[in-house]
Image (cartoon, rainbow, N blue to C red; front, side):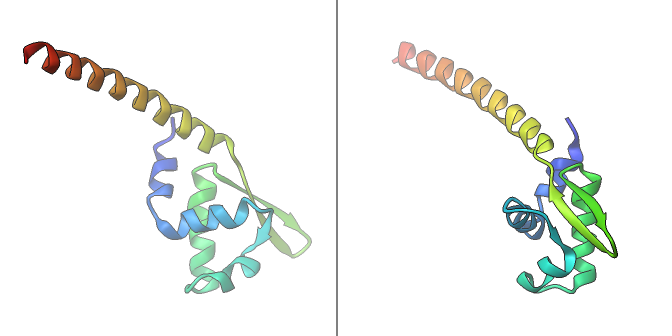
Length: 102
């Protein structure tokens, strides 16, 4: 799994960008007004998401449009689900142990 995905998700602005892109491809110019940032700052965040593989960019004439790529999010979700299941099992074992000791 790619650590860059979790690093990208650590920033609330990037998470909000992903939420906006989940509704469809957008340009940086179309995204920027929704954020208290400059267009250049939005492009920088989009670059981080692109580097993590979570966003793809496509040129349409002079405009660059960004599109959500869900595969890295699916991989992260799968990893977290596996981790949660392991911890649930460990906590269940601890509960049984404590109950036996009482």
